[in-house]
Image: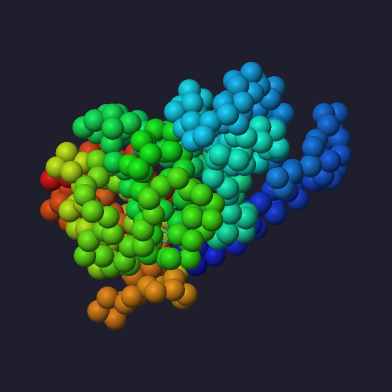
Length: 346
Ligand SMILES: C[S@@+](CC[C@H](N)C(=O)[O-])C[C@H]1O[C@@H](n2cnc3c(N)ncnc32)[C@H](O)[C@@H]1O
């Protein structure tokens, strides 16, 4: 199924974590033991229960918010707007037992295995990546968007289980937040978790989006990192047509270094010859299909649509400028295999 990281990357990451843990155990004399420095070393928890962080530093605000959630007939989304981004992200993990009324109004999260399948990580570690993109996207929209987020209609394209969609529930008016994905089973997960957005099934190779009207902001995190060239062109056209004239599209792409990380893209890297760096300064679209395609994925001219994708900056400047004017690339050092591309509609 779709994943931020291919299985080869997960294997490497798993091996790296294993090696790091073994090294840490050697240094500290084993998990939970005292290091040679005399400092107590806690075992790494599988679940980072956030209660003590939340109550120690933000207890007063969160007690008030919990009371307000208990008393409100509708979810008081705007009341969450005053929280710092990371506290908001922590609340969205549902990884705490205090504040039962806050927990009850916020969407549920799918189990850790599903999160990892879709995103390569889960829980607080995944939330830490999510909040980096959320904050960057809000910043980009403040710089390039035509109106305040509170007055904007926003779409999460390829929303998965609504991981990022839910972050915007406190910023965007109820009814103006939408999400779509071509995998109906993952939209069922969104609904079961009560993701507070209008949800719709899109096509793998869309002619148009499954919503009437237009959007001020559309974002697609880790979607263009997976599409075949034909599918990505169809998506770009459909996204262009669904944006308002001053609308902003924000997507992520892989950095060239990803070619070295993904075994699936190995043949594509080798096809570049002895000097890949100079080939990668050219307009290139490198795609390797996954063996297993998501249910319902269509082939375009015999080519499957989902896999691992590296798109060069030169390709974006040459091909995407038919529909969009690039407004800049953004590095996410906390999530370096996702490079953000901001695009103004032409
Ligand atoms: C790696 S997941 C990322 C999900 C979500 N954007 C997130 O960041 O949590 C990729 C998502 O793209 C969706 N997808 C696959 N093909 C697509 C297409 N042609 N158009 C839109 N979304 C697509 C998948 O179903 C999956 O939910």
